[in-house]
Image (tube, rainbow, N blue to C red; front, side, top):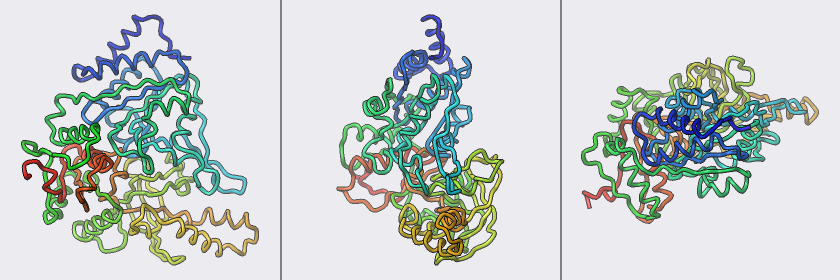
Length: 488
């Protein structure tokens, strides 16, 4: 059943209520969105979905915050979701309501028949709830439910749709920026493709696209240059964008020789966790991270207390016995802070460490102990190659051969700390896909290796996504003069 409404006057009343939660007079696009949201909210059509596509600076976050406050005033159950922990934390900060990752909301772990861990879709017990999913451009068609041993069999998008609409009268709002990078392996963001979503999931879909940049935002050098990048992406025009830094104090160029001093200054001003370098490859990220550890933080061991780590593969093992933490998932993209190194050791030809850690984006959760697979810290691939994991699995199995039965060996391997060791990378410098959904007060964007013929739409999306991670200061590291019209 839809949320009840008695007459058009109540409909208009809700629009007025919603508009009243905007801190300024809504733009034309926001006014259209207010009307569309009210119609969507009280529609009696099945599987109602509203798609809100908006660029940086067009007031998406302001609009979502207003949605949430208006929904709470009328008592409508509201669930906020985002693809990553950091994106959920950002959403929570502007919406004023607790937000969760999609994975943590929709999946549950159970015991399989052989005693191992299986993963399945949780029941949606909500009724007449509005699910608002931010950063929907990041939702891909992989990464979903597992059949066995953690191998993927369905997509996250499939499972999200099934979960939401399994709830009686539930409806969905997908919020995203289609100028950002699409999910890895995709040419576009499937969750923001209206026709695809309508056909594949039998949705009643309406789309509002916010394109008018809020006037106050154009005073920002970060957003005005992101706006120019977006216009070039819309026009499908390859070639160097023309960035304008004149008169803006929030965006500046940075030479590589100045990098160390600048990082030290930013860490002193904002703190390590509020500064990030965004670069175009895992290899470059590894190089930056090692230099930061050695020359800025003066760390000599392979891993130490205080290190910031990003998880690069989902893990359901280490939190399974933690009653004080309301999830069993340590997700790909989560940031961990090392509190203490308990033990370093080598086994099966690989380095490991036992450590006490905490989840950076969930400061109220207690610390917990994990085993870390340190090989991932230095590999130039996104995570440890599957062939190495298969070799580790076989080596661990040899240690349990005395158990006799295949089932017993498999169960023992599945709970072995080395086989379940977390794969992590250092997190002061990360790739743009890992940064997506997050925001930091200060962001350094590394141009990296670049030739003229490489400036195509995909790379423009990369720059646009990287620029819009910065809240207060954006530094352009070693950018070519070709990016700046005044130097031509």
